Image 1 (spheres, rainbow, N blue to C red):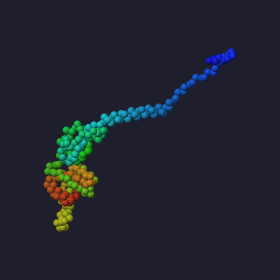
Image 2: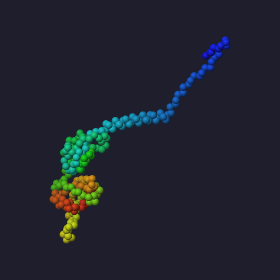
Image 3: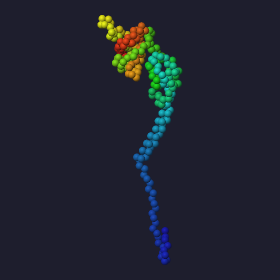
Length: 219
């Protein structure tokens, strides 16, 4: 590039600015890997959310208390929406007709999901048996939890009002556990299958709080 000068002085070349070089920013491999990881995690999060939504289903829950051995009706159950209920193994709402008419194998409590293990077609009482319920203190129960099928022995305790001469040896009654529940007051309610002929005597002894329960055989 030439510049003109005054007074006839020959033109001189002006200095030329060097071209501006634009430096490219180098992408660090670590940052690139982090970006890829974050994108992958975002995709997995979206997939998990979609899977959770798809896992939501309709299942049967207990609407009101059902005692052991009682036949289950449609009014005893309610349909609820549960996410991921497959792992809990509740009964799908579509199988309502399969459950209605069966008997409760254990005490059903409101607000709990119903499972097939809680219902049965088998008779809970054998021939010549009746079901009774005993209210017991925690200290009167021979184990922390008694389970359906456990064999127990009911033994009458002495009458404190009777004299020593008339106090007979404890009377024994064999029974089978149907279920045991724990009310809010921490007492126990024991449901038993008992021979019909023994029911009146056991009921009378229970009213007098003169029964001891002994576990003889675990199911």
